[in-house]
Image (tube, rainbow over all chains, first blue to last red):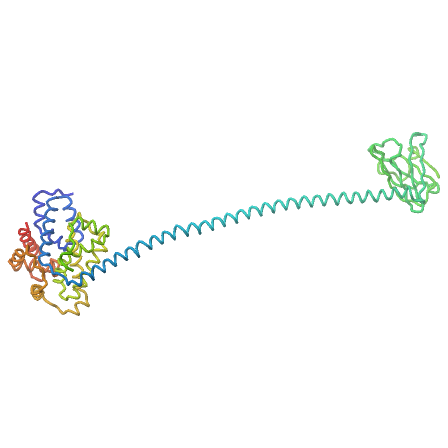
Length: 278
Length: 183
């Protein structure tokens, strides 16, 4: 920044720039410069003030009184402008502000709550769906297990029906097979209906030694002196039911031999456990 | 409106009232400055109806752009008279105005003003009036051109056929004479 000496300031004042400044006849750059100089140097500020006052006095000296009707006209236009300021500048602002503070939050709240409600509904629906699906799965499992036990009961019922038929049916004959010298304590009750070609053995009343994993008992029917296999069975601790064997319409006698697991084509005679004849 | 009812405030009071948009400020503003401003406007624009319109425009602009006035940078009247002068100069230089009013030269304007009956002669300033009359013709011419006719000093130099520096010096000397009297 340039340092201004007293002489410089005097020269600046005498340059005539301040008069031009007061008359509004300076460039924007010169205007800023004069204002900066006036702010910095009281002498320049004082000079400016003097020039302004003299030009103001000069204007007053050249004053022309405007027509009287002009006063009302101009004052009214300014007052109208002032009223406009108040009715169109300030009041609408307040109204706009009121609208903004009342409607926006309400609108915002409505959508906020609506969104929250939708979200809640969605969550509840999903939870209900999951719960219902689980219940459905449970029900399906229960239905399957009920069906399975139902069919088991049906089997049991059928079986019981069949076994009852053995006792009731007039066509059934029962025969107690007695132990051979090899196993004198053994005993097996056979029920046979030549008419129905059915052969049952009663596991509950069976008195025979438990067989091992390598062997099974085999029931034979002796038809005209020839042995006919009626199937194999096991003696285990829980053998309690009646067991249906292969059908035959003819039998002179029944015998049980101990055979290798799966049975044999012909009986092993020295392994005969029980035998009974009609 | 009688002169008794005219409102007058100090410049500081008036500026404060204008800033606060007080209704009384409008009346005070008009009563205190309308004749000074109209004197300047009617020197530039000789057509009464146009000059009156311009005075109204001037007050409207003063009122509406008052926030633009910085008391630290100068007197209120300087700011206002420049608004009035600029509006008047813009008007006189506009095409439609030029078409309406065929060129009236400087001498005719000055004579016309002096002949106006409603020119205010402030008794305290009668001496000044005489002083201004005694300004050297070239000093008076430059003041008339720049202050009342809206010429820039560059245009005035052109019009009067003298160098720029001479214009500045003459303008300064003329204003110095005015100042000496007021002090």
